[in-house]
Length: 447
Image 1 (cartoon, helix red, strand yellow):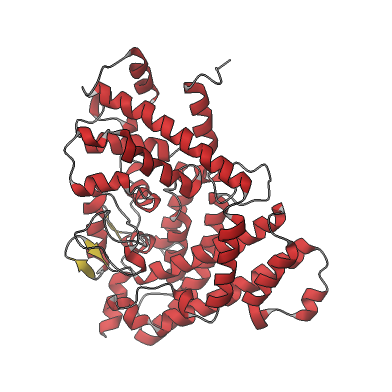
Image 2: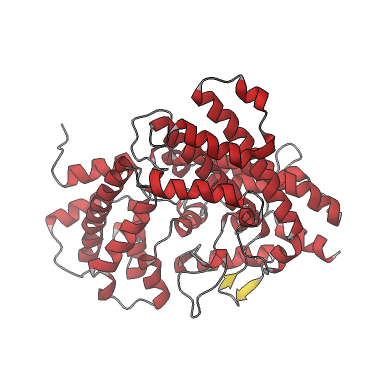
């Protein structure tokens, strides 16, 4: 009975700020969440955001958009697989395995929505600029507010987008608490007095500006507190979101790298075959002669084995996951851990250090640093911290009203106005950021 009530709360269909969601048998509240994410401009912009190979000329290579769609498909299957057993174990009422799948799928769909241009290098660029720019030193910020900038996180930006920035009049998409909690793989702020152990403590999932919003989500779903009112244990389904993400980015990054020639097809085949194990049919594989088709077949079998392995570890450790005693990667505890580590080593040594990726990501430091400097200094000057020039005035005219305070002026709170500058730059696509940089620097002039 206890676990049943716990799961019923974890599957909360409450929409923070809007009450309990209204759904139907044909289109549940969690399926509505999925649709809301699909129709956002932030989701569409991921088509031009780096996955591994930035600004790739190939129409085959994944972007953040295609990666997120693939992860959502994997997540739906994984959630439904685990959900079927959980429903049977605890006699959950008015819940179907498809509800588990829909929650995980929606969370997966949005999991990268907060990533800035140029992938993880973009996060590093934003952190480095705020750390070295001197703007933070001009103001009396709390330790946690300062850490939001110096430890900048795309995960926290994603929570901010879906709860505040997208459709700001609502505000946000008003997703269900279950989806928001499953989306938040790191349910802690950027700064705590004592660093937290476990996988969920390595990064942070919300800015100080959005802490109250996440606190509401945590209460609604009954998340276990780590630091009262400040940090929590993960929602159990967040572990499945992580698996879907890891499965897609590791396996398909390998597939992309082989297609682009950074990894020999034969090496990629061996790694995927080892990962797929007995799921591979030698007869079927022998009939495939095109390297691309062989890789696609092995990829599908590898993904299937990963799903089964992850679901088994999740269900075996269900009690520990719910109480927060388990805080590790599911796949690290499975039989596929060894083959996965082999792929990860290759990725770190070969794929993520490929020259085209490094060249563009390095340029991303210059582009994002310059844009942050231009708009950051402009809003600071308008707020009275420096000489407000004609160029600053023009830059503010280029800054959308959404990223300014009331009346079109920068927000009087220095923390909020700098966060809004970061919102603007982080929301750009790779191409838009490069284009704006070139125009504002005078390299390209409008014709």
